[in-house]
Amino acid sequence: MELVTVCVKQIAVMFILIAAGYVCGKTILSQETGRQLSKLVLNVVNPMLIFMSYQMDYDAKLLKNLLLSVLLGAVSFAAAILLSELMFKKSSPGIRAADKFFAVYSNCAFMGIPLINGLFGSEGVFYLTGYLTCFNILVWTHGVMLFQGGEEKESIGKTALKVIKSPSVIAIIAGVICFVLQIRLPGLLTEAADYISGMHTPLAMIVAGVTIAGSGRISDMLKNGRAYYISIVRLILMPLIFVLLCRVCGYFGASEIVFMAITAAAACPGAAMGVMYAVNYDKNPVYASNIFALSTILSAVTLPLSVTLCGLICSV
Image 1 (cartoon, rainbow, N blue to C red):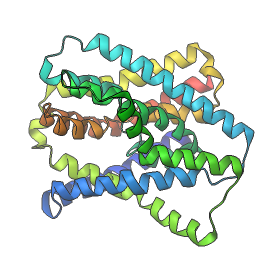
Image 2 (image 1 turned 90 degrees about the horizontal axis):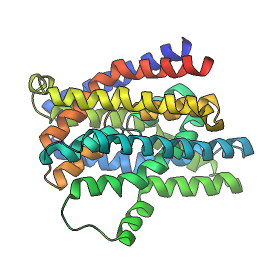
Image 3 (image 1 turned 180 degrees about the vertical axis):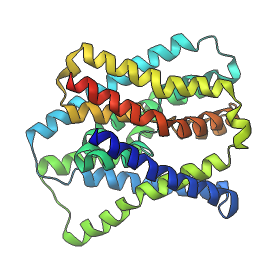
C-alpha cells in the first residue's frame, strides 16, 4: 500500500503541473512555444536525466537487471504490436495509424521518467532505460511506417541513423560506457547536470498541459467515444496483457523493481510523438491530440491501479 500511496501522490503532483501547463497554454504560452519546450525536454533534459542515472557504482547485478529490462521491453512491444495489428486492421484509413500507434507506444519518457524517478529513484530510471532503448528503436521505425502509409519509405540506413542520433539513445550508450568503465563527472559538472535533470518533471508536465490546451475544447474531447476506446486499450489492456504474460513466464527472471518499473512505463498514457507524427504526415492530428489528451487525463486513475495490480501479482 505504501508504494500505491507514493504513486498516487506522485501522479497528483504531476497533474497539478499539467493543470498549470494547461492554464499557461490558454493564456501566455502558444502551441509553438510548447513545441520548443518539448524539444528542450526531449533533446537536453531527458537525455541528461538518463545519463545521470548511470552515474553509480558498478554492480554486475545492476547490469544483469538492465539487460532483463531490455528483454521485458522487447516482450512488451512485441505483444502490443501484434495485438494492435489484429485489433485495428479494419479501422478506417484516416484513423488507423493513430489507433495502432497509441495502442503500442506510451509516454514512457515524459510521464514514465518522472513517475518512476518518484517511485524508485535513480535505480528505477536506470532500469527504465532498457525499455526506452526498445521504444526509441521502434518509434523511429515501426512508428514512422504506421504514419507514412503508402508514401515512400525511408531507407533502412537512414532510419537506423535517426535511431542512433536520437539524444536519448546517445545518452544511454554514453551512460552504459561510463557505468561499466566507472567514469564519473567532476563535482561541478555533476551539480550542473543535476540541476538540468531536476527540470524534467515540471517542464515535461507543463508541456503536456500546453499540448492538451491546444487539443480543442475539453467538452468536445470528452465526447469522442473512439478516443475512450483507444485510451482503454493503451492504459488497461496492453499493460494487463504484459503483466499476465510475464507472470506466466516467471517474469523472465527479472527482479520486482525491474518488473514494476517496466510495467509502469507500459501503463503510461499515449506517447506525445503520436501527435507530432500525425501533424507531420497530416493523418488526422485533431483525433491524435484527443487520444493523447484523454489518455493522459484518464491515467490519473489507471496508473495507480496498474502499480497496485503489479504489486499484488509480485507478492503472490
